[in-house]
Image (tube, rainbow over all chains, first blue to last red; front, side, top):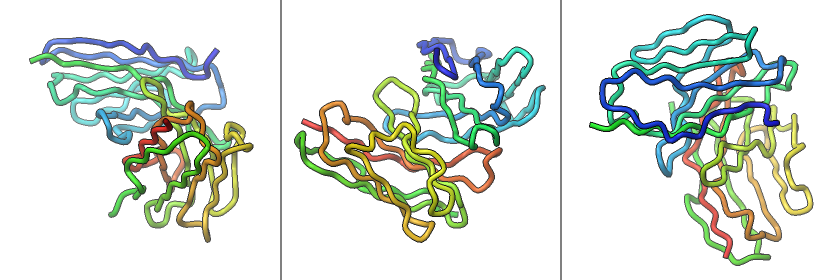
Length: 112
Length: 113
């Protein structure tokens, strides 16, 4: 079993839709949670980070963490074709050596 | 603020040859990571440095891969000898505060033929 699981997709949605991307994890040592966006042939770009259960909002993006269920989500409102990319969740924690562990990524396609 | 710099961007080598990648992290970032990303997969951590000390290298194939971080700043990752399955993108990342994530370079795309 991988430490961080993510549905690979692809997830195809129409422009303007609300997108929900999810990850589950098994290691209770993870305390810090991040979401990255990766365009083809580019390095991952940090979108958001959070270290507490609950919601964190940044523009059209909302990150949600449920530590009791070991489940995190990223919501994208009013999705745009420019949001088409692979979204990677990542997590770390001090008792896990602050090693940043990634999920496999979900490929998102937003159609005009 | 300048980002993480990596070179070269692309490299094609024959199997059994050697190759080296270079990374210059963001200034002031004590933690440096090297990741391997195979097409269609998430990045896999190879080695993590804190300043010039190794924090974790448990997934580094030490029979062929080596890495060093010079004076706690720049880093090089070497593969010798390369195998076909080493074809991947090699990503370097750095961070200042672990809880706020790491910043990635553009990566080096390696093709072993």
